[in-house]
Image 1: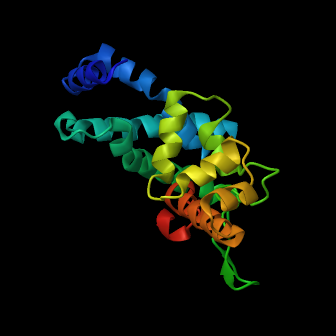
Image 2: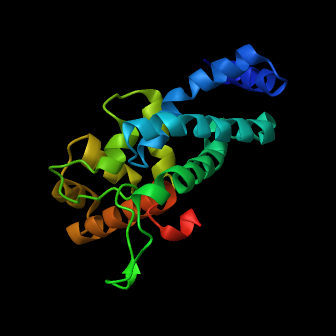
Length: 205
């Protein structure tokens, strides 16, 4: 589907064309499912939250203006995330999580929402692996590019985790220290966890 045709579908869907609305949902189906994967829910919860994510997409659609030159999926991400978080607050946290551990006198980390970041190259971080999956589609590349877009070093991360490059190779090629790359890796993955994986209690309130 070309950008021109996609914009046409978006405009017609905004006018209430059900066929175009269905095409739009189908077009972003993969994007939404990959986004849901970031929250590390059970298979059943993923199916249940999908409808909430679609509501987020529809809310974004109602407010979207194609003339501004933005991508709908980029614009819709915040709306989709909000609906998913609301679902988690209402349907997941009450039965599965404690908010405060009185014995330890601290808040409990929501482990099922907080994917561990394994900095060992022998194991691709599940957070990024779940985002990109095993396919090498244009949609996958767009999705990961958007996740890493705030960082000038995003190509380093993609080379390490998806092209098989080592930290040593990147350090030598870019003429930087290995510790600098490790620090950037941690910074980038902490950002993804905070902005997308909802590991921060404040985001849930």
